[in-house]
Length: 354
Image (cartoon, rainbow, N blue to C red; front, top):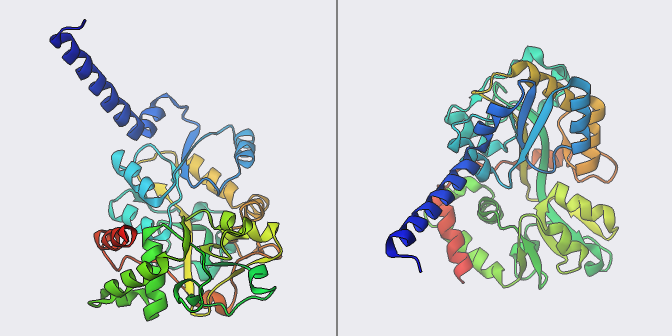
C-alpha cells in the first residue's frame, strides 16, 4: 500500500502531466515550427475550404510542405491565436467579424497587393467591406449567405412565401424547424425579423423581445445546430431549416424537393478572407500559396466541391447554386458586434433554460 507521501507525489506528477499536455496543445503550432523545414507553411482554416488533393498538388509543384490545422469556430481560432500571440501560423482564414478582433490585437500584417496575380479578377462588390475598407489586411476568399432550406413536398410541391416568419411566426411555422445554435446568429436573425435591423438591439427592451420570441419558437425547434440543416431536410425531420447556403446546397443536390430561399426581408452574408499573421517571416512561400489558391482551375474546383460562392468575377457558380445575385445580394447584411458577447450569452442561457 502506498503511504501518504507517495500518494501525494503521484497526484502531483499526474497534475503536472495534464497541465503540460494542455499547454502543449495550445502552443503546438509555435513549437512545431521549430522542427519544420523552412520550405513549409502552416495553414489554419475551416475544414471545407480546401481540397486536400489540391493541396498535395501545390506541394508537388513547389516543394513547399503544407501543415494544415482546422478549427470549428471563429472563437476557437481566436483563442489559439491568443495563446501563441499570433505565432505559429503562416496563413489564416477568419470570418469577417473575427478579422476585426485579430487586427485589433495586432496579429496581422498588410497584404502586398503587388505580389497578387489575381487582383484584377476579384469581384468589386466583395471588396471595401466594413471590416477592411481598403483591403489592406485581407483578401476575400469565399462567401456564403444565411437562408432557409425548404422541403417542397411538405407544401405539396410549392414553395411558400419566403419570409423569416416561416421559422418565427407561430401562425406560419410548421410543427418542426431546424434552428442554428450559433449564439450570434440565433440572436441577430430574429432581431432582424422583428426590427428590420440588428442596430435596434441597442435600444432598451429590444433584446428582451428577441429572447421572448426565441422562447416562443423553442417548442417548434427539432434541433439546434449550426451544421445539421442538411441532415434535417434530407431525413424529413423538419420541412424548414435555417442554415448557410453551402450547407443547404448539399441537400439541394441530393433531393429535388429541397430548395434554398433567401427571405424577402433580407438576410446576412459571411465572408471568409485570407490573412497573413504578422509574426510569420515566410512571405515568399505564402504568396506562392495564395496565388495557387486563386488560380482559376483551383478556385473553380473548390466552388464546385464545397458549394461556396466565389469572390472571383471570372468564376460563375454552377447551375442550381445557392449564391444570390442582383437585388438579393443588395439585401444582405453583416453580423456586426452591436451587442456585447456577455449579453448574447445571457439571452441564450435564458432561452435554453426554458
